[in-house]
Length: 382
Image 1 (cartoon, one colour):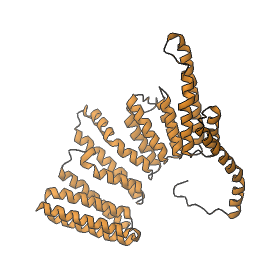
Image 2 (spheres, helix red, strand yellow):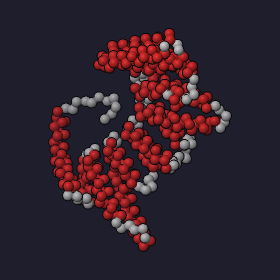
Image 3 (cartoon, one colour):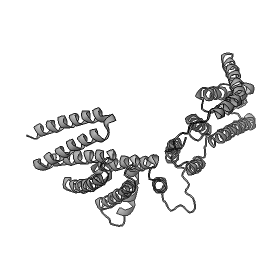
Image 4 (cartoon, one colour):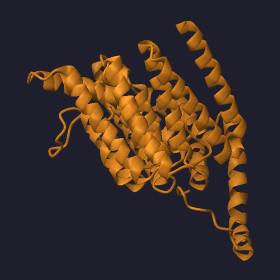
């Protein structure tokens, strides 16, 4: 299924032809399913039983039960059958090596089988799950090769969240095992820097790539730690480096939002940035400096809201920005500004109820919760 592509109604004659075409396949699938479960009940776990799961998965690779049964056959019968020949004594070292090689060959065949399905069904969770299982069966898996595979698959569909999730698994393995081998033309010094640049590449190709924005947010704490350590050696102050990075990220996400104000993915990242000003980005940022950033962004988003009066993402951004500002003012004791921020937040919730009547009650509840919290904070400040 493609994003943002409306499904078209299929003509009746085409549906009838499809039914006639699928009828023998459905019958074959039902017969194979019955045979597969019969084999399982009878503990039949030989190569013929494995072939039954192969035939079923050729017809429907998204049925997780058959993948589970397939793994059972490998783990409970085929792999143990190979390992029976192994022995730790020197006299059996050749046999042990042969058994290990046979297991590796089986796993490689399995990986190729999965890859052939991935090319047709790149968004099948169970294909990604089975590939991960296969790779983890290797005592010395080539995780750099897996990273190359994910690069390839994400070049075909850069918003495939299964691919992004698997990429995070691969990166974690490469980090844990310290196996990362950068390409000869790779300008990055570390895996974290490589991945951060990869998110930039994918976002530049498509600002609506939620997975790339999400990965970017996950990487920032580690990325900043590395970059600060590198630059501090040249005498730069850590806070100066972090603020420069923050300014760059704010400008970057603003470019995306002014290009298309309906980008929910970019608004997600925008919210993450302002939620983390004083947390993971610039931990020592003063309250006054934080207020500067918030006020500047409020002015920019208010300007955008004036141009896009029915954009709910933009209005919700005003809520969290002004709420942050109000919390900031709570520390500074600026009561007049706090009242203005609270008033504007209520106005925004009222606007949201008008432009999005389907969620009217949700916004009413959020407004009530906000007012209750604002009143509680005001009482505490007295």
